[in-house]
Length: 417
Image 1 (cartoon, rainbow, N blue to C red):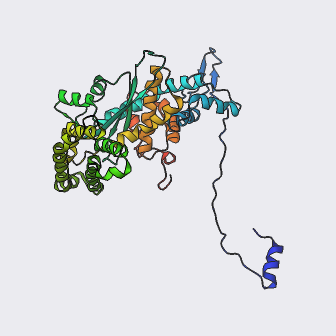
Image 2 (cartoon, rainbow, N blue to C red):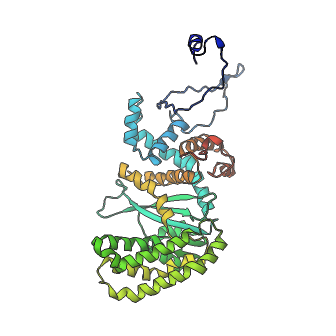
């Protein structure tokens, strides 16, 4: 505000009157801090027979532990959303003057996930079966203390609802010690519908075992092979190469498919049959005709052979308007885990790997539903302990990431990044 003297100097004896203030906004950053909260529980003693009675204890995470919902939510958000390993969080807490070891954080994380968050995970797993189309992918992970055999690889699998579904998307991780058929067989045992994958043979074997499961292929993987073949050629020879012609045909199919994004499944199917199916037919006829024109050990041959080998699965999207053309959504859903493992490199134990699968599932599903992970974790860790004496788990319905019962502070505001 201007002082009286400044106003007199500006306007003189003629006087002035004040208009509405000019308003501007600035972000103000408050550094993180950790405070020790003191909680009191009333304790009473009878004057007659000296027996004691405590007031009802509020829900807590772990008895005789300093961990709180806000602290554990911060730890989970840092590691599973922002890819900050526990050893770096330990260092950061030390800078605040608080000694919280990575061992303590891992202990809290595993116990609270097994006791509370796993309940929500199990419910979302059941909800996953309500959808007609799912997408699946997997990525290797090191679990060092469980098996040190050379070449032994563990895997984190991801299953998510089809990309076409905009409401209540679900993303679930599933840790397994290998990549064999038994794992998707168990995870998808109650699912009936279409599962889009990257062409891994395990899924095709599973489809042959069942009459109620259809596997859809991924055009992005077909395109990727030709893209690699083109990039391997000298620039002056690229546009004359068969790989380039294959790539242009697949790109044309994608352009037509992208025009159908806002249509209903029924309308999308009609347009696919009318405009895209003839392009796909022409593409496969051309690939089969030109297969023998390329060297068998080259990248172009690899692309041609992949398309022909996967034709049955690459055509599935033409027959169902809810099936995506590729499996990119599943790859994007597992990206957070892949970024994280570059920072923390390995998981120490199977219990830690199973815990990671549950927490990543909740974090990724929250993000897919425009829910803020930190606020959501804090809310879950505050609410679920209150229901440990319930005779059923119906309360979990109100805690799902798409529930209208979630408090507004958990929701990401429209327009925010």
